[in-house]
Image (tube, rainbow, N blue to C red; front, top):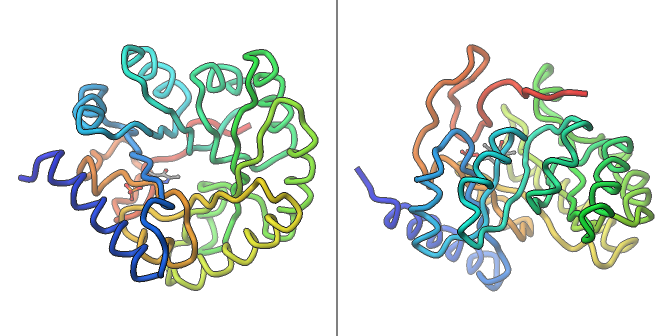
Length: 249
Ligand SMILES: *Cc1c(COP(=O)(O)O)cnc(C)c1O
């Protein structure tokens, strides 16, 4: 059994190796620890090792964990499908939202950002395609609709557009999918120079994502271990988010 310190060191090493292989500065790739399904004590253990950014994919789990860990200076991120009526609760945790994929949700998050007094950082999630049936589960806007949604986000006073996010489609090599994402990200930056973030790469494909320009990798399994089965719809495939989305508008 490995320790949290060993797992964190191994992931950091993978990030550094991948960045150098791509001719990039490892400091340009942030590590988001995806703590979904893991108890607050496991977050505490990683936080004690210097990890500060944590991600959750269910609103209720995020708000509960953020409250339980309020004594730590953590930075929260939300990476799951988000229901509009939970936008305010998510925003109150200070979370950056990686899964923005529709205008009504953007407006709800913007209102929440105005209420809390600081804009909500958002990534527009892109659907990179893949096997039928998987798309609705993973969410994301079609590539051809990215620009329109990004333009709308940029106009909203309570949001700050950070860039694009995607999950590599199953059943396809991640490299070409992330290359498509990088192309979309370059186009976005041309229109919105501040939106230079690229949230891509998980335990199974962070090297390919960093090669394509990821500025933030979202890693769960490689840091915490394999998630327990929590739902009959869970497919225990490495690199796959667990369970069915609990919240769909
Ligand atoms: C669970 C999840 C991750 C982390 O996946 P691992 O394969 O466990 O590293 C990353 N991104 C999203 C959107 C997730 O739901």
